[in-house]
Length: 287
Length: 292
Image 1 (cartoon, rainbow over the protein chains, first blue to last red):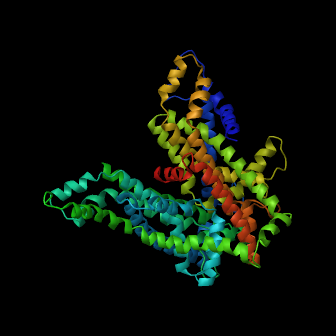
Image 2: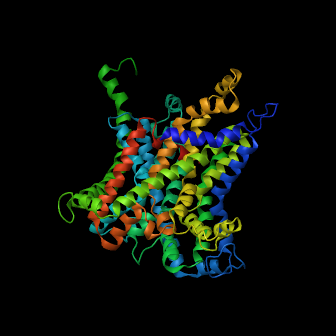
Image 3: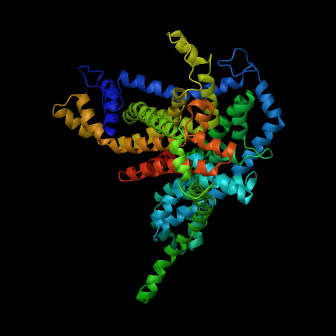
């Protein structure tokens, strides 16, 4: 199996890497051949395409899913921001997302601290446990949670959404915070202690400021995970409570309502901003 | 302080902070056990007990004439998606290791763009691109392939899944390739190997761990895709998650859906087990998060 894959890869890149067989060896670091450049450009196009499609689509004047749009208007934004249904879904998503981000961050930071700062039996198992929600097939998780939540009467409740999404968001927080803790030099704590700082002072004055960017990016990840999650939300939804992605899903499958284009653009811009915030914080600290 | 401490109390002194931090993992672990592992165990349990105790749901899968077909289709699709993703991602990741830091920054942002684009927005975008009369349809018409509509076909689902999965392949590949010592390639060259042979015999073998973790990660995640096949595929070409979802949402057949889910879970765990001997996708996932 893997040999076959290797062959394919060889066929694909081998040619492009070998292509500019010019007498001068320019292929040191910093230079790549034209074949490779083309491959990279095409891949980049594929990666970007959906994002690039969604935004112009939201300014379409047509009343169908027509791309590229023939006329332009703001009607779908009006329809999005003017609709009680869409605004309610957006509000629900943001509220659930914030609750999830807070819960997952608190729990995730605790886990990351526990895992990096102590050695106990079963540490490896706990680590694996934390990563499981990332790897288990989404649909199995969704029907499993749905099955139990019906019995516990948690489906269609905000608390049900928050619990389910927190579980899914935990791995991201644990990973982000663990990474920033791993790069943290604990001799600083000892230095602070020898200078007379208490454990609490050390924690809040030395540890927290350095780990904060990791925590912040964990928070952002958790928020976006919840904001973007559809599969579990599809099963937990009731007519009374729907998240934005579920409303988007319904608007494609049931309604064929182009308002989804505006909703998509809003989501793209919002998630990008949320995920960029920790980057800016980090940059400011550096300079 | 240090000299007067007895051996016993020193031991306690050292153990206390460790013990304290260990308790921190408890709340999250409890949450996962109650709201994640217990539900999954319940689903597996129900597959053996509903509607009647025994292997009825499983023998049913073998004989209903559809489930096996759907499972095979899903596995083949996942293999194709993982292979295509690997072939597309490899040159990209390789280029990332060869360009100037500024260009690498741009390439990284482009890889991460799908992460930042809401999944529903991306599926909607593919829906528009692939529909009848959409850009892909018209482009194919221009170059002489009339009436190829991707929407509602496995091919259409595959294209979208490849795009969604690309970052999960590029990032582990890149982190594996980054660690390859370029001097080894130079050494191969100085020993007379042409560039392509040095690449094939030195670079590719050294990047196998990255390929393996990327491939397994994409394979596993593709198996569990629900939204993309539900929106872009069709009931005639359904994948396993659609069948599972439908059985629960339309029929409330937790037993049958549970059996299919257990099979899916089994395949996932099997792949994870095999790969865990070579490094593991958890590492790759970690890479995906920390590269942000």
